[in-house]
Image 1 (cartoon, each protein chain N blue to C red):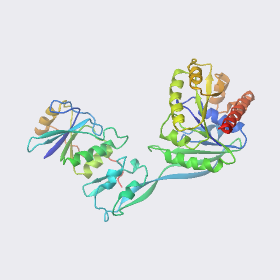
Image 2: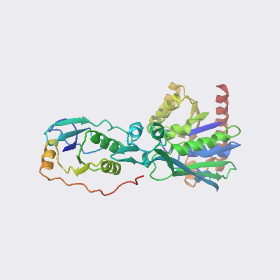
Image 3: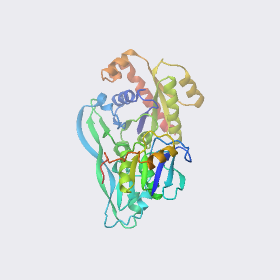
Length: 283
Length: 119
């Protein structure tokens, strides 16, 4: 089973929740899909065991075959290929590697070359399970390709392990890519007006994607009652709550996973996991 | 010779637009006949590559000289690819004022400074 942990607003506790699940649920692996700023390995990471480069492709033009017909430029949605006077300009940074320009080229003048955009790193973690995380190189526009590779990795494990996927915040292309093929999603939200406002966008996204989901309220006790009223009104399930507790904040600041130091919270994550298994079964 | 000016609205009294790729419109002027027309910048809301797209649009209207604000690196490369000369619009406020300044030779020609890697 694959479970994505996401949020609208950043800093609500996705990584905290993911790492606590990873150490409390047996036979699990963890994936950090927030390739623009991965941090799950700071909590779970142990020993780096493997690094793999991720590539994207961009078109190159055979000038002898090109007739400057302009079809490639008309096709490209991202203005990555622009047939100009007596030359075709390619902005390889803008290319989304869809392969379309090659298909529409009538003379076969287009081939593709590869360039590296980031890496996927495999870690042997402190809790025993594997951790995979992606890193997008600075200056690259989209991490979707790396996230799709991480999805392939999680698919290869999901038949006999529970995969916890720490997702990028918000509702961008990266988030959609990270949650596209999951069995269940957990939204981590804090009970503040800002937290609730951003959470609503994630709820809309998950409903449109037809992914079952529930909510974990982190820093419960802060803010106001809006999140409770919203969940009641929209019949959204609150799976559990993590209290606003200085002890937890201290452990987090030390890079520790709080339920390993505060065993009273281990049951919280085990109970939520049981609920999710039940909800999946009922579908 | 045909020139282009980034413009917010239509006509000589329109304000100049301070962006190139995301300019609202382009006023295209044929200096030989004095005719001018306003062309909507259809690519102004592109997620990326608006600059290159705008250069394509100017090229399709046979523009020889583009009067522009700051140009992004991709637009700069595309201008060169289509052999369109670029001239800086400076601080002129309206299309009419800018046109007169160009005719009087008061505008600075942009020489290529930077650029992304080209394949």
